Image 1 (cartoon, rainbow, N blue to C red):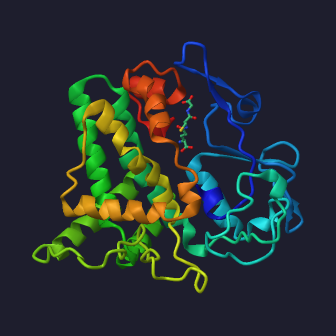
Image 2 (image 1 turned 60 degrees about the horizontal axis):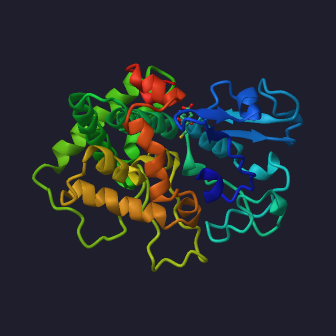
Length: 334
Ligand SMILES: N[C@@H](CCC(=O)N[C@@H](CS)C(=O)NCC(=O)O)C(=O)O
C-alpha cells in the first residue's frame, strides 16, 4: 500500500506458493535468504544509492537493503524523506498526491520523470510508529484469533477484542486527537504496555469529555479524518490544487483488517453492529481510504481472500502465522 500510495516503483515477486496439499507454502528461495522467517511483505532495495556518502547496508549484503515487517517498511520510507536518494530510477519532483500511478508495479518504467516520491513528514514519526504497533496489536492479532482458534468461546472473546480495538481506533480519528501523539512520545521506545496505557488513559479522558455531548458529527460526510490527523480529501477538493491529505502509517497498518471483515462474517458469522455511530464512522474512514487509487490497487479479490483464509478458518493452514496462533501466540509476536 505504501509503495503504491507514494508511487514508488517496484517489482512484485510473488513469493508464497501453495504446496500440493494447499495447506502450506513453498517459499521463494531469495525470500528465505533475505528473510529467514519467509514472511511477506519483504522489501529488497537493490543497487541502493548512497546517502551522505554512506552506503545503506545495515547488515545486509552488498548494495541491497532489506526491510522486513510492513510497519517498518512504511517507517523506513518516511525516514528517507525523499525516496529518490535511495531508490534507483526515482525522479526528483515534489510529491504530487496520488493521481498518476503509471509506473507502479512496473520496474521497466522506473525512472519516469512524471512521478515524484517525497514522503509527507506527517506520514510517520516515532509516536505514530508506536501507535501503528499498538493498532496492529489490538486489531490484527484478534482477527487471526477469531479465524484460527477453533474453540467458539475463544473466537467470541477474540471478536470482542477485535471490535474493542476498532472502537478505540475510530475514537482517535481526526486532528483533534493529535495531542495523543505528544503524550506517546515520551514512552515510544519503552514497553508497548506503556503505549497501551497512555492510549487507554487518553481515551478515558475523551470519553469523559464527550459524555453528555453524544451528537455525532452528522453532515460532515468526509470529516472523519485519519488517525490523529486531519480530514480526508472530499470529492469537491480538487487534488490538482493542493496535495490531498494522505493516510498515515497507523491507517495503513489497520486498513487490511477492515477490508477483511467479510471474511469473519463468512467463516464465523461475526458482523459489526453497522448502525452504531462508531461503525458508521469506521465505514466512512474505510470509504475514504479506498478513494486513494494507490490503496485501491492493492485490494485482493474478495473470493480469492475467502479461499486463502479457508484453511486458516479450518485450522489447517501450515504457515508461520497459522502455527503460531494455533499454539496460542499473538500474530504480532511472530
Ligand atoms: N508482522 C508481519 C506479518 C506478515 C505476515 O503475517 N505475512 C503473511 C502474509 S499476509 C505471511 O507471510 N505468511 C506466511 C507464513 O505465515 O508462513 C508484517 O506485518 O509484515
